[in-house]
Image 1 (cartoon, helix red, strand yellow):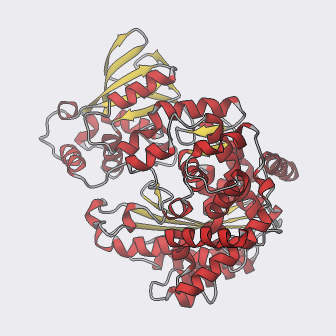
Image 2: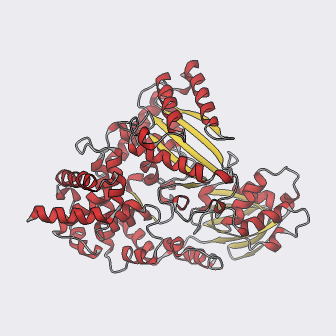
Image 3: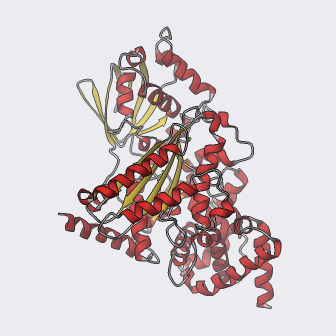
Length: 576
């Protein structure tokens, strides 16, 4: 059966390659696939997975790096890395996880791979190692990804995070045939990881052909059971009192973790050790506390169908759209509580609203979150323009991930799924000629109203949004080809600058507004018509020339408006 699984894996990878505007090198395609499988339970988007792939020269035998604080994937512009960040914003004991992936197309698991990973991680996880010294051994891209973990660990020292480091070794081999020496070296690596931080936990996981195939087909369950004490029904919707024990079981997956996918439509993430969550935890802890539902606003669940058998609901396509703070706090507290803790016998009020109408769902999401302080950017996904873009993409064989991972969970090709952040970066780079903002603010680009209104406007034809998404995907694919010959750091720093130059060349002049690309979009002009190899050569020359001239690091050049201005002037002079 193993051979059949390998054939099926190859078929899946081949289908994904065909869906790409530019096929990836064979080794890179397998690395992306393996990283997706290694992170199958993390609810990351396809773009987030690809962004963590660092394979290539100087990778230290590490092909993927991912850092998660709680359930949130960290990026270089995450709040924790900002100057005004305070450690008290993160709850004590919050998990800080580092997931490393090594992916090899060979059909065995070798000692050499473990040895190389051990050597690399001992240096990379040593907080005393200087980044410039590390650069003598490893690529800047790998160092940058590990720096997210190193910096977060130092910033959160006073909060005593629960540090977990995991190494996933994926091949096309059989895990049943791993020899004893490989297993022993893996145990030694686990010890190294555990010693990397006080109280740390280290683990090594092997994924062979069978495991990769199982992970590739894994999808979150959207039909869940919820038992209740008492209920009232109006039409097809319900209000129920649910014991905290039953609600805890509803929230918990088979690995005793939180079912994160049922919060995908919630407008904000867990806020950590803020006052309201402390009060919720205190009410759970106190033996003399009144009934939980007296003190709590309750939970709002949207689903596509609800049926009742006995005193148990069977809910399809479950999404918790209000009550994320309460749910996270309940799960965190009761996960470590003894089975006879009195809190398990208390109740929470749950509203179950049955609807399949997207507009109605969005109204409920907005209405149930208006009573709390929610940043405007958090409600973006429910805007009319976002739903219009989603509808237009779908009608043209592409999928706009307005609700994170919705399309991946229903089996759509990851290569045709575009997230809100990626589209925003593409618009900023090609439609507004500000690639430095796209590069410097990958996860915070939509926080400011003025930026959002420039990027997403009803004045911009929907065809332009689709063209920009396709163009950025094609440019990203081109940069991964052997012909482009780019390093991971060059790809990370220059992808949006190259996109800007391509749009400018196709348009004939600098682009100040996305609407200017309407004719190109209507004609569905391929971005390859801009002669990407030539533009990349010009861009590289300017990039390194500018850095040498000012003594800037590669990252600083890419993130600053000065380089963009220099690039415009250089190109204008070359044209004259």
